[in-house]
Amino acid sequence: MRKLLIHIGRHKTGTTAIQHFLQDNRPRLRDFGFFVPQAGRVKNAHHGLSRPFQPRNVQQLQGIDDYRQLEAVRALTLESDDEPPEAIGLISSEGFQNCRPGLVQMAYRDFQAQIVVYLRNQLEYLASSYAQRVHATDYTGSIQVFFKDVYLKGNHYASFLETWEEHFPKQLLVRRYQPSNIVEDYAENVLQIPVDAFSMRQSLSNPSLNSVVTQFKCELNRRKPKDAPTQLEIYPILPGLNALFPGPKFVLPPETVSDLVDNCRESDNEVATRYFGDKQLFDYSDFPTHPESPIRDIQFEAMYSAMLQLLRETNATYA
Image 1 (spheres, rainbow, N blue to C red):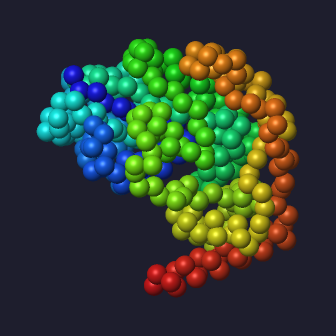
Image 2 (tube, rainbow, N blue to C red; image 1 turned 90 degrees about the vertical axis):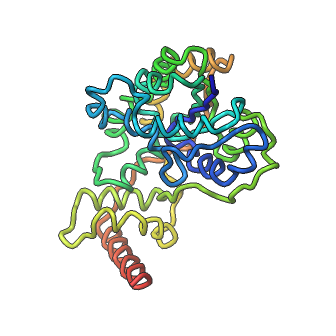
Image 3 (tube, rainbow, N blue to C red; image 1 turned 60 degrees about the horizontal axis):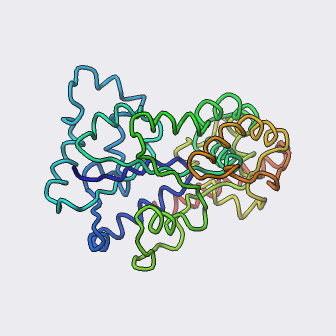
């Protein structure tokens, strides 16, 4: 049975960098006994292999007796059949994070599948998730509201891993996410190959907003000016406001830090013991905090005007 490493994220743990690494180095990885399938590929990730099993799509699986017959899964199987028997398949899609593991197991049961998952410091994860939600959508809630109403629903690591372990027993490889060396960690500790044998991109982090621009975007979502551009138009230009309105990266207010640490301590400690043989998963003792700072009217108007100017300049460039 062919071995298949399924990298499932999690979100906000350098998945883009790992996916670029895999696609940039497909020929070189063959020299080390790996192959990166084309099946299910969407840009640099294998989102086509996770998409059928995501919550919004599972209704479409009704009436299908054998998930191995799904187009993307069949394509992966056929492509794998052309590879040497000992070659190990490498796929990556953070879309797997929200899939039901039982469906994934049934679809890929012709493979000896191992699940690779990275866990991020909860405080960094919450701050990054909130900033991204505000950036990419019309979300208007405060960080504390987001924490209680959204974040807590899916970020108890122990229960998340337990569900995957149930369907892939003893086949979970759990790693701590370190932003500075995610690709090195994946190569050397997951694939167990020397990273210096491969080409590496300099920086692949997705553009993010500083704390000032994040608060501006949240206020923009609340006010919804009649002449406001669409979310699709706004999204790519907002990082350009960072230079015009500098500020530190978005961090959590003290009360949210306290609530999150208290809420996740037991779960995190369980994961630390089970998967790392440690007493704690992450050190939260010296984490920076900052109270939420509402945008004043005069500052909002200045930032709104600057955003519209950036949009005009961008449109003129591509006209």
